[in-house]
Length: 454
Image 1 (cartoon, rainbow, N blue to C red):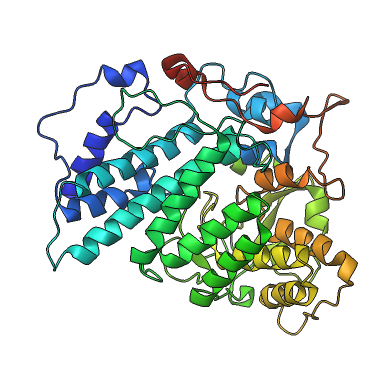
Image 2: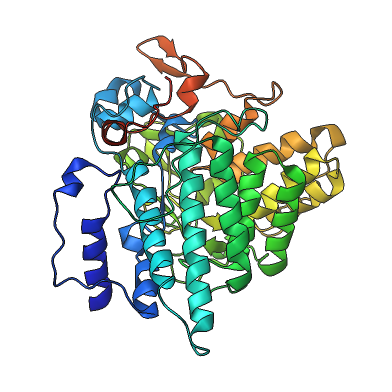
């Protein structure tokens, strides 16, 4: 533990969080430990409280799972209010954890990769060396992908070669200015890192903060879905389910509890493949934040998600309590429920309607009160619509809805019309550019990289 604390202190000084000038003025303490051993590097990758398993959460505010009392918008922080209303200038020069935390993860990952390159493993340490390298590749890829879902345009094959991506930083050198490249280059790096990582990772892990082959396949399924590569996404989802297909029976939960789901790292939620927390915002837990009423009404009375996910805050406001972390912090990780839904959606889009409905029935059988679930019988023409509805219901507050809206808006059948009603005025995103968050001001000022149009 002492080694980990010192490593985190060192990395906190080394890491630029966007390479700000303030960082460059800091000098590391010579007493701090520089990671040199394989155990040191594992400790760095296990730095869950320091950002290794953290993803952006600001996009949840901008999506449509929640609404906020229009009369009390001034109670939100400036960044939260601006995000909720899709303002042109969101950050007002403030630091943005949703950008900083994934970059911290990338920095740590590059430190591990560079240090491993200087270590020649013997026969007894080769497996650990390979696992560490693959884990670092996984974390770097995951963080890069999560950044694309907020700070880059949605993937379209015909445009990805010309649209700006996320800077692909492959070293820990903080003074190096890296341009944004193209969106295609970013996705290529992410996918290549994951493909390279998979063979040397364990199939499953005991500690879900660590990557596994199941996590690689789950993340690739999520990525290929966002790229509309449905056959590849279905293959990855199927491969993940071959390793990890267990679902949590919601009948074993106490729906009246303040937090019905098991706490993180308890090992009691078999659905979790990889732990990931969304960057916290007061918006998520405010008594003035309510779940979209049409979403809440879409749950059947016997559907246990209705009581396990939501609680009555009074004044006709239904709050969210269903994080898979078993706490107020929102879960943004990889879990079996999402993989069944990816498999179902891709098969529905490929015309394999029976497979898609079977996936839904497998999932929903563990969501309803015992003895009440009747297997779905769906006309072929309505299967995809049914899958997308169940996806929204099951994955509420996971940080995925924003990505879903961005990709679904390219199909008039499923396009989502976002709006807020403030003082009798209906506010909508001014244009498609509002579906991409701006790069934080501090990063633009330091590196001079291209800003997203708003």
